[in-house]
Image 1: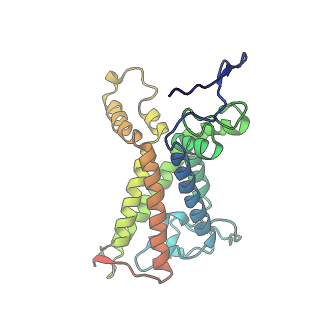
Image 2: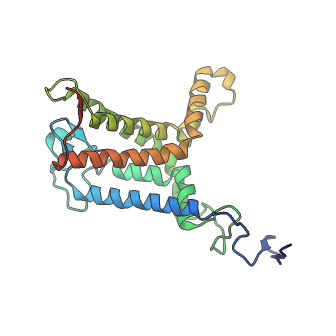
Image 3: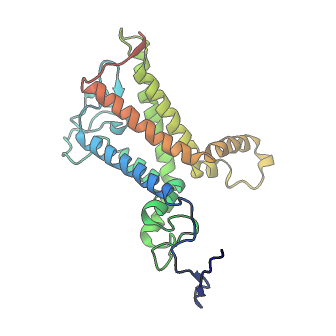
Length: 272
C-alpha cells in the first residue's frame, strides 16, 4: 500500500512543505527527551548543592568537593581554601567557589557538543534529523547573544587551570590517611576517576584540538604537535561520552563527599 504525501515548495526558501511534522516512524524523540532529563537533573542537583553551602569538606581525609573548589568565601574552612579566603562573608546566594563556577558553566554551555545537546533537546532547532522545527526562521549563531558562543576557545585556557586545581584537590588526600600518612580510600578512587574524566573531556575539546594542530599548514614539519593532535583527536571523537561521564563523576564525587561531611557514612579505607 503506497502513502501519498502532498507537498508544496516555497518560492523563497525552496523547501518542501510537508503537512506532517515528520515522516519518521522510529522513536526519534527518545534522544532529545533523555538529553533534557539528564541536563535538568544535573542543573537541579548542582544548583541545590552550590547554594547549600555546607557538607563540602571532610577534614579527616582532606576531601573537598569540586563544586566548592577553590573555596574563597570567609566562611570556608581554612584547610579547604587552597588560595586563601577573601575576608568577606559571601551572601547566601553567592557560591563559595565564585572564581571557578562561572567559568566552568560558560565552558560547558558554549561547548560544541553541549550546543548540539540543548539546541536539539530544549531549543528544538531542530529536535532531530528530518523532524520539522517549531521556529519560522533560522538565524544560526548570528544574533548578539549567540555570538558569545565564540568565547569557548578562551574559556578553554581558564578551565585547564581549574582542572589543575581539581587535580591538586585529588592528590592531597592521598597523603592524609588515617595515620596522617599515605592512604587510599574509596573517596580517593572516586576523586581520581572524576579527575580523569575531567581531563578527558577538557583535552578532547575542539578548542584544544585546534590549539595543537588546527593552524598548521604542514604536519610533516611538526611531528610532535601532530602526535599530540592525533591523541587529542581520539578523545575528541568521544567528546559526547566524556561530557556525560564527567557530569556523572562530578555528581558522584560531590554526593560521596557530602555524605561523609554530614556524618551519614564513613570512608571505606583500602589502605591506612
